Image (cartoon, rainbow, N blue to C red; front, side, top):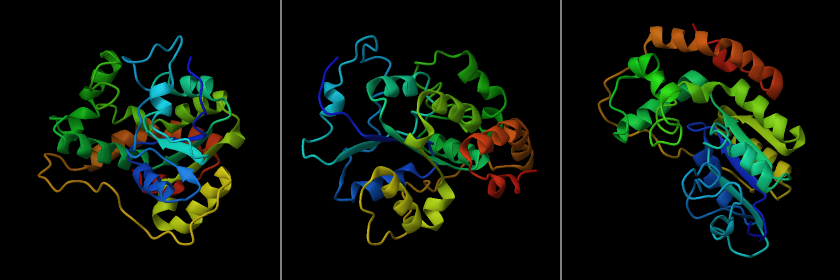
Length: 256
C-alpha cells in the first residue's frame, strides 16, 4: 500500500444530482485542490487495482503537493458495490458530500444521458421494467450493467445512506438536496465550505453544467412510468428521510 498525503473529501453522489456544478464551484476556491478532470473513478475500479493491497500512487498523482485541501467528485461511489468500504479503508477521516435529486427525475435524466451517448438503445419504459434484469443478472464489473443501466437502482437512496452511515460517522457526512444548490448556490456553498473548514466564495452565481443534448428521444416520461417508479421508491424514500434528515416532500408531492 503506497503512502502519501490522502484526499480529504469526496463528492460521492448522486449521478445527475448536481455534482458537476458543485465540482466547478469547488475547483474555483483558492483553499481547495480538485483534479483537472471530474470523476477520478478510483474506488470503483475493478480491473486495475489489487484491493487486497491497493497502490494509491496513481490516485495521489492527480494532485500536487501544495498544501491545500484535496477533494474529488465521482458520483458513482455512493452506489457502486464496495466503493464506500474502500474509501473508509483508505481514509476513515474522509468527509463525504452527497447531493440528492428526486429519484424519478434522476432516473429519467440518467436514461436521457445514456441514450444521447448511444450507450442505451431501448426506450425508457422498457428500461425501468424488463431492462432491470440487465443489472440484476449481469456481471457487475462489465461495462454497461451497474454503470449504464442502473436507472432505477441508483434511486434507492435510503438503502445507500444506511450503508454510508454504517461506515462513516454522521458528522463526516454532508447530505444536501440538489435543488438547494440550484436555487440557492451561495447559501449552499457556504454550508459546504463550513463543513470543509474553508472560506466560502464572495459570490456564487447560478450555473448549469452538462445540460442534456437536444436530440430526438424515443420516449417521454409517461404518467404510468412515474406511477411505477413512485411505487418502487415510496418505502425507501421514507427510510431516506429518516436517516438523512432531509425532507423529500418537494419530490413526493408531485408523485402519483
